[in-house]
Structure formats: C-alpha cells, structure tokens
Length: 305
Ligand SMILES: C[C@](O)(CO)[C@H](O)COP(=O)(O)OP(=O)(O)OC[C@H]1O[C@@H](n2ccc(N)nc2=O)[C@H](O)[C@@H]1O
Ligand SMILES: Nc1ncnc2c1ncn2[C@@H]1O[C@H](COP(=O)(O)OP(=O)(O)OP(=O)(O)O)[C@@H](O)[C@H]1O
Image (cartoon, rainbow, N blue to C red):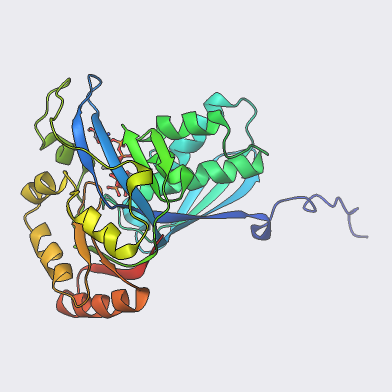
C-alpha cells in the first residue's frame, strides 16, 4: 500500500510564481560636480536617463534570503553577501520588521564597474520586487531610505525614469526627455568609482565656482535643441577617468567617428561611453562599425528613454 498522500509540495513556490523586474542601464547625460561635502561625498547634479537594455531580476518570495546569478557578466558581479541585490534587501529588512524576502535570481548582462549603474539598478529592482511581495507602495519612505543606504545611484534607479539627480544622488526630480537611439561601448576595462572621484582632488568643504545646470523645466523637449544644450554640459568625471585609464580616449573617438552621431560622452564614472542618434536604426549601424573595428569591446545598440 502506498503511504498516505501529504500534499506537502502543493503550496511550494515554483519558478512560475516568480516576480520579475528589469534593471536597465543608467546613463548620465550630464554630470556636474559642484563641490565636496564634509562627509567626503561629492555634491552633484546629473541628468540621468535609462536604456532599453539591462539586467533582469526575479524573486521567488519566501522566508530565506538567497541569490543566484547567471548571464555573461555573472562572475564579475558575484552572488556573495556584497552583491547590491542582497545589500538592498538587508537594508529594507532592517527598516521593515517581518519583511517577506525570498530567492533572487539575477541575469547579469551589464558590465560591472562600467558607469552604467548596473549594481545600483539591480538593487533598485530588488527593492521594487520586495515592495510587490510585501504590498508596499513604491513611494513608501522606507523603500527610499533603503535605496539611499544602499548607494548613491540607487534612488534614481528606484525612480527608473529620466530624472535630474542632485545632492549625493538622493534628490530625484522627474524630467521628460525625447527618445534617442543609443550606442553603449565599454572597452572591458573596469573603472572603480572611488578613485575617479578622488582624481578631482577636492577637499571636504570645497565648493566649485561656476558649474551650473538648467532646472528640469528649462531643458528643451525637442531632440535637436536638447542635444545643443547637452553639448555644453559635460561629465566632470570624464577627465579624471581618462587620466586613470588611458585607453578611454580611443572609445570616445570610435563613437564620435560614426555617421549621424549627435553626442558622444562618458556615463557616470566610466569607462562606458555612449553615443546619441536620432533613432535606434542609426545606433545599430554605428554599433556594426565600432564592433567590426574593436571585436573585444562590449558594444550595444539600443534606445534611450
Ligand atoms: C558616478 C555616479 O554613478 C553618477 O551617477 C554616482 O555618483 C556613483 O554612485 P554609486 O556607484 O552608487 O556610488 P556609491 O557606491 O555610493 O559610492 C562609491 C564611491 O564613490 C564616491 N562618491 C560617490 C557618490 C558621490 N556623490 N560622491 C562620491 O564621492 C565615494 O568615494 C564613494 O565611496
Ligand atoms: N549586482 C551587481 N552588479 C554589479 N556590480 C555589483 C553588484 N553587486 C555588487 N557589485 C559591486 O559593485 C561595484 C560597482 O559595480 P557597478 O557595475 O554597479 O558599477 P558602476 O556601473 O560603475 O556604477 P556607478 O555608475 O553607479 O558608479 C563593483 O565593484 C561590483 O563588484
């Protein structure tokens, strides 16, 4: 006689119960450094937008927190305690007793330490998934406190749409931007964020005269006008990043030389550079040229906004 049926597996979550979120690449269209705060962080203002590609994160809700990672850049991101997915989850759990967590699976497409805020976007996706699993609203201040505690780029990634980011990264104002074709190029050389900021050689309390940035409402909505406005608002981290990693100059040149390129610039602390185009088709044509000349580089055409 067969043992009595316990039906024990009936309510065990399966992969099909997983919640899913995208973790898109963050692009800093502009990045002005206004000075250095007494806490050592730099005071910034940056126009941030999100790409049509990035990582993917799943959560199978449950009692125990765990993470597995797959995808082309899984090894570089790692699945240990320091992964920003787990750090964000722990920051939220500390602030929200009884938080239901679970098993995360990250598909890591974005290069690591690349200026695309990959880890920050993964952390923000983790917070959005935990909010869904716990019936929390996305504007819950606890979610925002956990984002801020996880990293400077996590609040803007939690917003997940074009924004003007300021302070250390904690102030985020929504901005409407036109859509662009986008080319992302990374020479597969990781660039650590801390040393790039350190290359500015600012002391705590220093204030830089001059750097100014138009308010969200003063930014043009038309693509051509916006490109002209962006052209005079650089990424202030580009000179120290180029000093740190000499090969970055070649990345910028390769994008700038493509047909119909509207703007070429470094994102975040580098070393990914982006090119803007009027549409995705032009970005694909540019990607083919760059990839043919530099087969070892990470080259992705997509859209922005
Ligand atoms: C360069 C940007 O990606 C632009 O969006 C961000 O400012 C960096 O964001 P992030 O990687 O999330 O940065 P965090 O993990 O908070 O900080 C990494 C390191 O960058 C430096 N850092 C970061 C942000 C900031 N406003 N000032 C800084 O000086 C600090 O040395 C810090 O130790
Ligand atoms: N999920 C993750 N994905 C990528 N890196 C992670 C992750 N979790 C932790 N890290 C660590 O975070 C560091 C920064 O990685 P990330 O790819 O977010 O950098 P970045 O793109 O330069 O970020 P930013 O643009 O915010 O400066 C790396 O040293 C990496 O080891």
